[in-house]
Image (cartoon, rainbow, N blue to C red; front, side):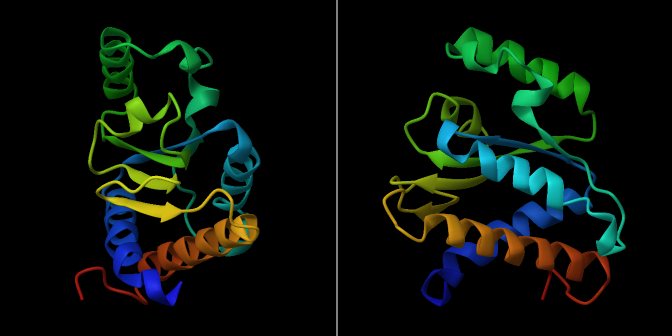
Length: 161
């Protein structure tokens, strides 16, 4: 992780800043990482953290027909629905393969929080899907993100410094 801190820090800074601005976080994954989306959604608003509840939701849970949103027209209609549903704004936190159909939605906004497998893209964090320690790394990365979120919420960390 130490080697990747220069790629990691700006992405987390941007995502946490957007949460503090009141944006909703819509978590979306490819199929092999659906367990991780459930983990995030279970842990992020754990009452044991003694912090405000935060608007993190499953994008697939909010829109069950997400798998049918593939062409440009449907993506635009889908984004219009999201704009109406989340007037304070939203960001998509995508975790998965870069060539997954869902990335067409995630790539459309450079402020989205992207953890991509086997593909490097601007404003994303790169991971290898074949890494035998991938699941452990995902859990550790989530823990870092969550601790950063808490530190900022409790005034222990300033995003501007």
